[in-house]
Amino acid sequence: MSDTKHLDFIIVGFGIAGALLSYRLKEKLGKTVLAIDPCPEVTSSRAAAGILNPVTGKRLVKSWRVEDMLPAARKTYREIEKNLGATFYYNKTIRRIYQSEEELKRWNKRIDQPIYQSFLGKQFEANTMPEEIQDPLGSFEIRGVGNLDTDHFLDVMIDWATEQEILLKETFVYEDLSITENGVKWKDSSANHVIFCEGYQVSGNPWFKWLPMSPAKGEILTLSGIDLGTTDILSKQKWVLPIEDGKFISGSTWSWDHLNEDPTHQGKSGLLQGLSKMIRSPDSLTIHAHRAGVRPCTDDRHPYNGKHPEYPQLSVFNGFGSKGALMTPLLCDEFTDHLLNDVPLDPEADIKRVIDHYPGASQDQ
Ligand SMILES: Cc1cc2nc3c(=O)[nH]c(=O)nc-3n(C[C@H](O)[C@H](O)[C@H](O)COP(=O)(O)OP(=O)(O)OC[C@H]3O[C@@H](n4cnc5c(N)ncnc54)[C@H](O)[C@@H]3O)c2cc1C
Image (cartoon, rainbow, N blue to C red; front, side, top):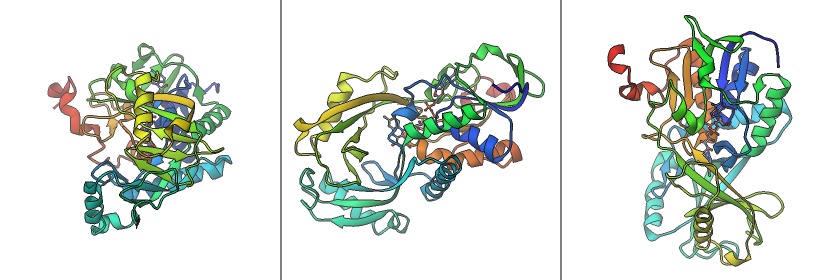
């Protein structure tokens, strides 16, 4: 490690959020940074399929600020690819297969709404997809989709941070941090500021555990054995993302109990059952990998970014739920502008909106 004793920033957590923040602060803004994470093989960012989907859910709703987030994400990932000589971001199309007449009606409604027109593409007749796919009601395209290979992205970022000597592979112990008048002291180092990016484990953070989280476990499978006949991402109750060598990833499950990174039998059978509604020969599938992670979802489904109400030298960059790959690039730029130049955060991302949950709120105001 570098022997720097005074740092601009300590960043706790090196998932997508912490990695992007470390990169922006160090590489683009020239700050001194130390990122701390044991870098386990399984985290939410490692389990993620990394699909950047502009229109989601049963109700076909445009994601929050997606018209700004998608271009910002593409720009950020492409810049990092170019700078570090790697490829982990891909442009994609989703072929969404109608599950019901209801969904068909909803598409017809959405296609007339100007804000949806750039994302909703062609509509296809029933039974026009490759042989293996069941599309009895037809399908339609979602355009402008991105795909971040999160596993490869994190490997590249860990290599970069290791080379820069700014990554410490250990668990940050909260008791080792003391707050000083102008910053913090941590072990032998001092810093102006600490940014916490621990994903769902923020619930163990003594300064930010009051943030109302609703973490959700998710599981995915890597499979092969059938010819999908397309490189598009397929979606019908579950999604399927073709990757290399005839393999594809399929996900995902949602569960609010037993929050850990252990894959379950129940998760696997739920995924295979969901898939059987999309593909004709589920019995031909071979499972290559089964992963689980916990999404850092918040009560109102918007991120939690901002400074601690009492200790402005501590802040949080978290709460990206099921959309970390999509949201973090733009929000990382806005968050660093806030920290360095006092630019206000988007109120829908700012932790000020949940300040009532802070135990010290009444004394502070
Ligand atoms: C099954 C599944 C599928 C998903 N699919 C998608 C998708 O298609 N598209 C999309 O955009 N998002 C998807 N997501 C969501 C996405 O994974 C998250 O939004 C994103 O990974 C959150 O990143 P993060 O960096 O905030 O948290 P994490 O990835 O959880 O990273 C937190 C890091 O903090 C570290 N940490 C925690 N406590 C400490 C401590 N005390 N000291 C040091 N380090 C600590 C952990 O080791 C971890 O590395 C999916 C999630 C799951 C589970």
